[in-house]
Image 1 (cartoon, helix red, strand yellow):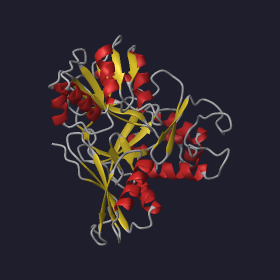
Image 2: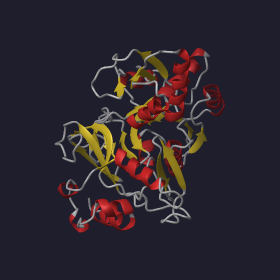
Image 3: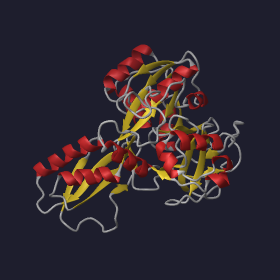
Length: 404
């Protein structure tokens, strides 16, 4: 907490967005959790709306909506950004300079990765920062990285056979897919013994299925806005909060902190000076665990990802927003009402857009499916329904997945 007043003052002076949101706040007095709880929560949809409004102003506007303190020539902040990424929305995130910028090395170390390891990185290197986040952490540890990215299952499996990596980083569902392919083809992967997974739920059933193949998998919780937030240890008792962030659990829809053990929205303040998000509402649900980690790590722990506080959900490692469902509906005037249903189990996510239309046609379903792919960057099925078929409960996205 000692670094908090300095970070609040920096956000006020260097970030146009927080200069406005924290106007009148006495930064030196924000030195405790109680004081932090008096500041407003900035939620993801508010950050996105501010970015969109700024971009609508045209050339020379700030694509980060005033939240970033770094940029490039032509922006108010004319230097400091090494990369810029795009997440669904679209929303843009900056990456500054420095080793292990996203602070993932600590999670990798806890998962057993060490200097000299070859790591197969199957996180995306395209648009989103996940691949870069993990690569920088691996390199900070002294590991060698194979940038596999997403897809191309056969080529990635071939690379694993020929390069014999020691560890895997990526989504747990893609790791299971690779292992299933290897089993089908009677292919051995004897060197692969550890994995750090993220981007999706990692239920015990999936962890045990991977362990049965000789791989010890651990999970971490990270976002494109904040970098690493928390990570699993060999104790398997929740996730240890990273030292570069301050985590609060608040009552969903408010900024009011909840006592330890109660489930609420995870709100994070990052100490990153380049993107100083103060009380950023992740929309994810979790709870603080009592006591220290049995491994001796002194940082607090959370239970891990326990669902969404809003209707935004994560599918195959990517966020899907209600605004994206609305964008799909706007493309097709035939749709009177729609709901995106996310289903599946054991890391096999599936999306189906259930849409009410007057005259169901296969050609319309095909056009809607194409829109789903263009807007969400993922494939989805389409189910056309008669008017009045969907419940009148206000849901735009329904998470019907099972984790057993």
